[in-house]
Image 1 (cartoon, rainbow, N blue to C red):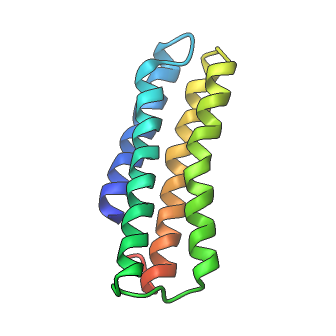
Image 2 (cartoon, rainbow, N blue to C red):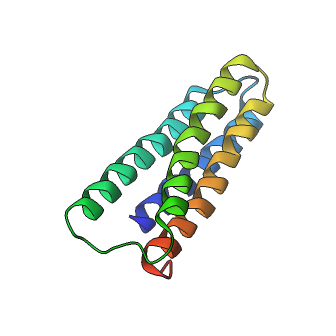
Length: 119
């Protein structure tokens, strides 16, 4: 899941950077790329819940910390998308690009908490 999340975050960040240069307002492609991150995070949360509920690999770190990261990561794209729709400037694309960077760091940390190391 980490590799898939990394690829989605990197692609979304790249799309948002390109659209910052090309688009005068929030670009549909930027919005869709951030929505793809949100979809990944929802799937990640469901996967983690099922895996933990049915006796998969337990969390090495604290469970409250893990689920706090998941909840924060899921809420971040939603908040940024709302902000981007309200702020109809070129810079909303740039702000959306930071979602990919921040979520990458968060899923790296989630893997550390879950397995003890990210790789």
